Image 1 (cartoon, rainbow, N blue to C red):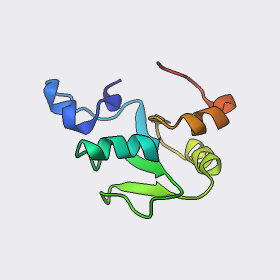
Image 2: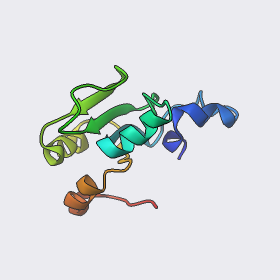
Image 3: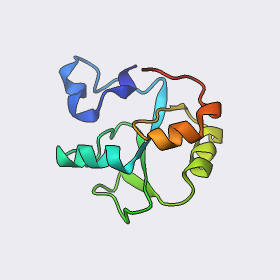
Length: 109
């Protein structure tokens, strides 16, 4: 699953940085997961995907390629699932995963 490799590490695998997304094109994450990356200087951890951070406390992201979702996360994620595109990879976000567990098509650990 090449799309799961964070942008900062894609160059370590020959040809991966140039590989088109085949499985995922969107990655929502929770605020806590996003802030862990910020502490390591990762303002746009998956620049090769559409990135969303679900948060009621953040007003803006540290990078314009990351959108903040402050409304109902369940409704937002359901809307993403209905949209045209590749699959969605939830990164972190245990609360959204728990509340949407009946709608999760595949769980990869």
